[in-house]
Image (cartoon, rainbow, N blue to C red; front, top):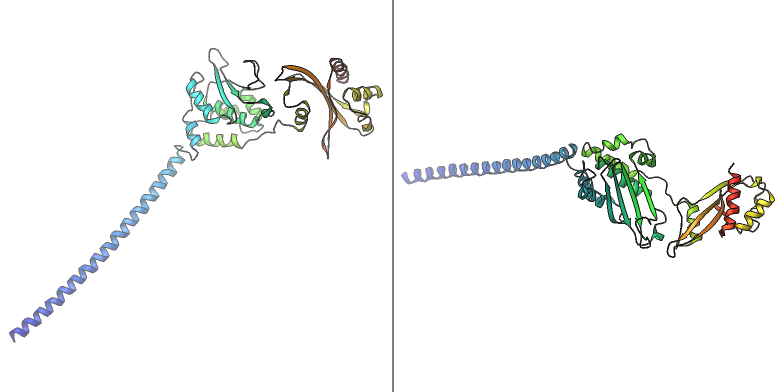
Length: 332
């Protein structure tokens, strides 16, 4: 009887113990689940906090997605006399097809200026300089270098014989940059305030990159260079010209133009059409031989056909004098 009671008591205690362990295990599983949920929530909160921090950092203008903008903005408040910082700015923004051969800083008297000398291998490959690239570079320089008043760009090649023998040059002030950009947003005051914070500078930088003006490589200039050849160039400020109403030409004037321009009776056929043509002469330089000559062109723009070259020719000095006298008379 005692043995039976003892066995019964032991069995009951065993069941209670098993039930207690079961509850403990169940509690541990719940605790583990709660711990896992808490850890997961903590991770999510950390990720969100990090994202919010980055967003706030960007909102507060401390960082840009564009590394170049960050590098440029770090160079704000540069002064024209600080050659290393000026050079650092140029290294970040200059057109890659050019090589910077030197810079000159004018810091003794106002207007303070920066001249950038570029070197290319062959000017024949750079007949038509990208004005947009120069505009953007100027916009960045004016915004970062607060006391620079003037910018000059001079481009040389292996045929340049000295500092004065540049085949291309451009001059900028804050005002003429705004005039070149041809919009109402970029003004001298906007340029001056472009670096007040990173957000404003990034907007300004993107606006400069999005602004494009008409290219200089007109159809007519392409035709001129095709005629004069790769080794020749137009001498700067050498052109003279006049618009001509063909219907107003005398017979002797038509014959003179056809003779000098080798037009072979092409001008007379425009009688009665009411068209205007443009006559222009240029001094031409063979930059490899350093030899000079003159040429003349007569052309018009047809509404459907586009550019029409009526006559073109290399001309003698006496022929140039005839055309010059004609141009002067028709200009009044």
